[in-house]
Length: 438
Image (cartoon, rainbow, N blue to C red; front, side, top):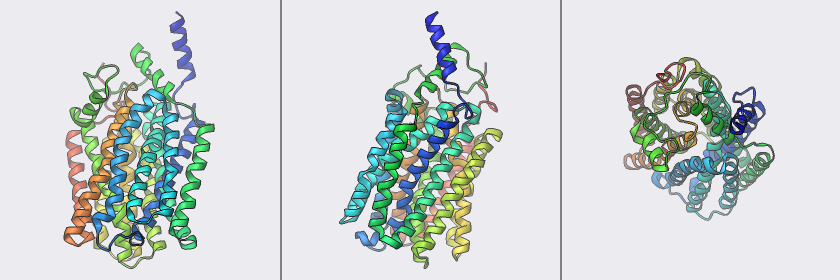
């Protein structure tokens, strides 16, 4: 009887819903905003000024190497962060992510060569894997299933709006203080402030996930029942979860391949898009404005597109977003002038916004709360390994063809194929639109 009383008390304490957990929901959004600022500070300045760090002009593979290190580390640690957070909690993993950010500004300030930038991005990968993963996991913990699209939309809005703002701010600061000094000051202040806020204001959200798990086990879960994959043990091991999400479940594996295609595109836009704009005569401030439009449209639109998927389902926005992103990328080499490239950047941002938060919500929809963080970590492993795959593939295409434009065409083709594959392979995951059979 005492166990039953404790369970009822737990359910009363850990009520899910945005309104019931508004303070924590906002605090998590603030955290991911700071995470976005950290990566945003690099996306405008470093690719354009790479020759100052010893990268020969036209050496695209060498230039992309810092994205390879970032993608490989972030991909692996996304999965580790998910598993670790189910054991030690979300908040501790978040704080570990902020600790990992502190070497970055010092390494950029004192870097004698591009190799140091590549090494600094290992720490950036740790920061992004631990901190960003925990913000979205924690939001999903404390929200209702029918709010997940909106919740992930808010999370990715805050993060990617900050990516655009960070890129623009670092561009202006570089003009005033110089690239190394600007990135040092910016890169030191952001994690310090964020870590202090996290330590004092963020709550541990793992108890919410455990409460939801008990509700499913006892039959007390209220709402549309999600289509959890069959044949999975109650507390599956690491390999079981990894193979389930990566290969064995057709919907989850299709979402993983779409995540890879997504980050191939983002690797292009991170490194080769600023290089392309700079080669067409745009200065660092103008380049910063165009790339900021991509980031801000991506970020801001997710407030709408995440909520949209709570109404129309996840699959349609995901497929449409992949194709719209490919259209925007294909347009870049065909147009000329800052106005046209800005419009292309806005189209790419809108495409990203349609699928980016909704893939995360889709994975969460059909992942049991006992292993949801690990499932999200597995998806994010494949998605962010796409950075490394994209950097190597796109760097090779640009290097061998001596043409950045060919890399844009290659990426647009990848996105078109990915959208078709997902349309054929994946089921709708929203529990209201495609609930589990009783």
